[in-house]
Length: 322
Ligand code: MN
Ligand code: MN
Figure 1 (cartoon, rainbow, N blue to C red):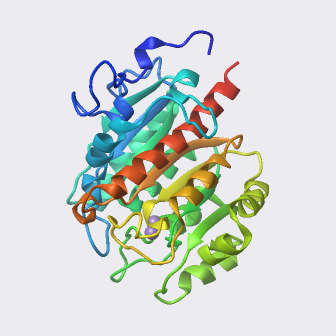
Figure 2 (cartoon, rainbow, N blue to C red; figure 1 turned 90 degrees about the vertical axis):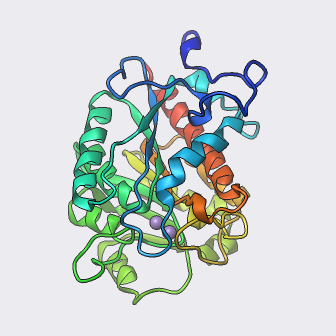
């Protein structure tokens, strides 16, 4: 960017204390969804958890992530990326979902993200349960199937639940069936725990989806795994979806479906930093569930991982700018 656009800088903590004021994501300005003219990256909440099959509460995620994200500062000390200087970022508030209808919420999310995509704005979303990634993908994949790097304890490739219903365990199977994702450009990282019936693994094998268990990450290391992931997704557009339950529950207990033996926060930070340079058209951080988050540490981890994702997105916006 030529000069930094001061309108889009977070409120500094030495001007207004970090515990004060209305908590927007990372203390960014709030913009209405209709005022996207100058915005490069939109931070959006989708407070929806009605597709949760076990412990609910992720509907409260966006608000808690906003509150905890007020501690985020300007520069990523590890990478030296200063996202708010590279791209104009704003908090668009929450998508108006319908907590009593999956179908209606799905339609609302698709319509909302179609407008975001039409405006040329890159979305960084805070969930909500993982169901929300499906309608987001439906809006973002208008020009053809996307690749995806998906970090999660679970594949979310399961067939319908309860005799024919979508849940937060089915979004990516649906997205593949609908042609929103190119399965040969999907990499799932961090999978673990006991499985329902391995039907998700069968689906992955049939479609050529690369699944990398958390044990493989520990054996090979993050850099080696990410070298492979980068090769597989290539240079074409990808979406990045990060389920907070990928992190070990000792560091991120506040989530609906925890699994032991997960990634450490440092590994997740390193993993996200290794996305830099890929053609990332959007990202989400889902499944933070504040009612299960005694002490707020999970939202704190989530807010920091959102900052890492934002650094990748802002670097991409900056690189693509003519
Ligand atoms: Mn998930
Ligand atoms: Mn999960």
